[in-house]
Length: 184
Image (tube, rainbow, N blue to C red; front, side, top):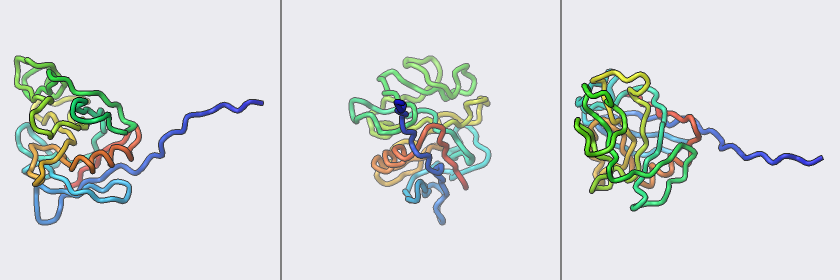
C-alpha cells in the first residue's frame, strides 16, 4: 500500500506579546518564541480606547492579516502569513468620513490616505494588523501596522515598529492565524 505524502504544517508558536517598557510610554518589548525584541510604539503609549490621531497603540489581540513588502528593496519575507508586494500607488485611507476608512486604496485618492510606497524605509516591510477592520468604526483609528523602526526607535503614530532583522525573525516564527497581543 502506498503512503500519501502530506505537507508538513508549520509548528504554531505562541502569539507574540508586546508590553510597554517600564519607565517609558513609547517603547515596548515584544516577546515571541522565548526571545525579546525592543520596539517603538505610539507616542501616547498603549491604550484600551483608541481614537484617530491620538498617537496611541491600541491594546488588545490583533490578527496579523497580511504582510506587505517593497520588492525593489528586499526579497519576499519568509513567513506563513499571506504576503504581497507594495506598488507605487498603494495607500491606506485614514479619513474617518470616507467610505474606505481603514482600508487599502490606490493613489491618487480624493480623501486623506497614507502612502505605503515611501522614500524612507519604514514601510519596506509592513504587517497589517486586524485592528478596527471587522467591523470598522469611524474615528477609532486606522493604518495600525507592525513596520520597521527608525534607528533611534522614535515613537510611532500608533503602530508597532521593530528593527528589520527582528521583524523578519518574528514573521518567520508565526503560522497562519497568528495574533499580536498588546498589553499596556
